[in-house]
Length: 169
Image (cartoon, rainbow, N blue to C red; front, top):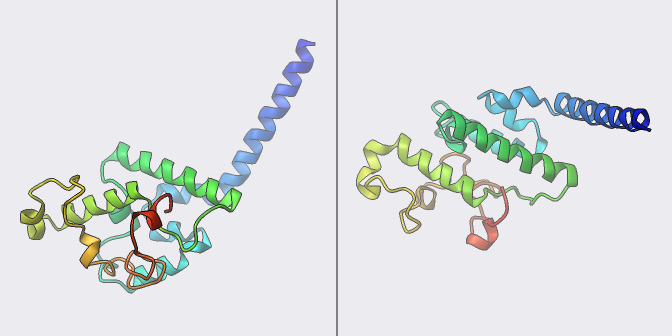
């Protein structure tokens, strides 16, 4: 009986590991550890964002991770893992929002990175507190900076209120 359970467990574990390895290879998993913006295009839904970024004012100075991820090692990889989980789940179950929208947590990361990079110009606006919900939002006036005025970008038609952004990335 114990041998039968061990064999079943080994088969289950083998299928789980094999499926995970195949999925990781198929999804080009190692590319997500890089800072190459092309990694963000592994999934076709991001093509308009990638194309618009290439034409944006930030193309020569900032890639996807510079704006969309924290800059410290552990926070960056924690955010990558969380986003990777949500992206994998969304595409596996086909329950993602179209057009793709930024989640509130990722919006805060974006805001923080804007302020850090442009600190010399905006320090008087924020006085160091970018966590205040009443603080000025950079994308309120500069929505087209990273991705232009695409309908799918933060500068496009779908830029509405909290309910529109809630739960989407």
